[in-house]
Structure formats: C-alpha cells, structure tokens
Length: 315
Image (cartoon, rainbow, N blue to C red; front, side, top):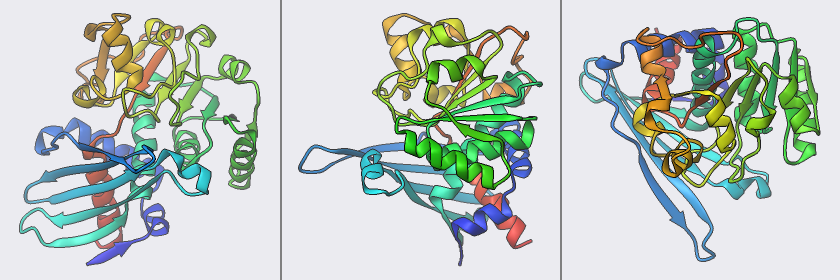
C-alpha cells in the first residue's frame, strides 16, 4: 500500500487538473455514493471543543474512500495546524487498500478547488483583485487556486493577527503572486472583486454593508452552526449558492442562522455545485450581482482528489 505525503499530493495535483476533476465529478455525481459525514464533538476536562470528522464515499468498480480528520481550533495557539487527517483509498472492485494520503493536504487542495470551481460560475470573468480573509494553509491554497483560473493582479491578505497576514503575504510573493498585507478589512472588502474567507470565526468578519456591486463572496471556514464569517445583511443582499444542499442547509452558521431567524428562506438558496455543473441553473446573471458561495466540504471532493493523485502517480 502506497503512502502519499503532503509534498507528493501537491506534486500530482495541479490546480487546473483538480478543478476540472471536480467539475466532471459533480456533473456525474449520480455514479457515486456519498453518505452524509459524521460529526463527533471532542470535549476534554476543560470543556475545550474539537471535532472528529468521518467522510466516506465510493463508486463501485472504481474506488472506495474515507477521510478521518480532526479539527482543533485552538491549535493556532500551539503553532500547530488546526486540521489533521488521513485519507484511505481502496479498490472499488475488491476492497483492497491502495493508498493512504496526507488528509490535511487533500482537504486543503480540494477545498480551494471547490471554491474556485464555484467561482468560475459565480465570479465576474474579469475579476482581478482577490482578498484573503485568514492566513492559514487553506488561504494559501486559495490564493494559488484562484490565480490559476482568474487573471489576479492583486492579492490582499487580512488576518485577525497582523503578523499572520504579513507572513502569508511574504510567502505568496516568494511564489511570484502579487500579495500584500492589509489592516483595514472594510477598505479591503470595498476594493476586492473576489473575497474568500477561511477562518474559524464565531463572529461575522465581512459585513454586508461593505459589499460592492459585482463582488463574489466565498465563505470557506465555518462548518458548524456556531461559526459565522459574514452577517445577515450579506446573505440578504447576495445570490446564495452552497456546495451541497444536504449539508449546506444544516451545518454552517452563515446559512443556518439566517434561515432559523427568517432572514432568508430555503427558496433563497439558488443552487449548489451539482446543479451548477449539470447546467440546471444559471450562476451569475449580471456584472452588478453580488454572489455568495458557502462550502462546508463534501466527501465527493475528497475521493475525486485522492483518486486523481493515485492515477497520476501510478498510471
């Protein structure tokens, strides 16, 4: 059985390839079985909360896969990544284990690729200024992923700790991306064509009053009802899309909270990655429209990413 490190996952999974793999996979999703993921709260003696996630998916005669991931939000205080995990890929014809992958890298890359896939339908084609809200590993991947599909000429980086924004901006510049750190979030939101948030915030960061006509808002970080990266005004002003209706309407606070309070209704959710890629709905309809995409992650993304790495490395 082969083990793929984070470095090998990056080597065999370039951005254009994974974005197209996801586009084809979501369009052909009826061929896959993807049960709803399992959430398990982890509580220690101090009451600190973390989460254990189990995400299976399979396509018989092809592949079977499952991801086991942990999310410890306070790991940033220990200079550790918030997300750890492994992905197991098995033969879909006989169940033989084929490979184990660095789950955090699979997660980071497929997450960024899913957001960019959505943006190809929802962002303006001429979008050139990207704002990163958050300075973790996922934000770094988002910068590269968006730059692979859009003509990004300016990348603004904001983080609740300015040091993190400075460090990520410097790292992106070393990769020849036009990044700069910013301290004024409201001003950066006003200047951006695409805003992507990858935080674990429980309080809104990007406010709806700040959004300019034509902007695309991509919400990546929140995955529980207690988390919010934007406010009610934003969802009221925007055309809303999710990665999947199944999880998007019950897990993330950015959607669940305004639904429960009556700020929006289910009918306000215009579509998901399945209906977008299958051309059942139209994405952006005008240059002035504000669009919002909320992702919480989907097991289909993981199995598509892992199988793409496996096939690229072991044709």
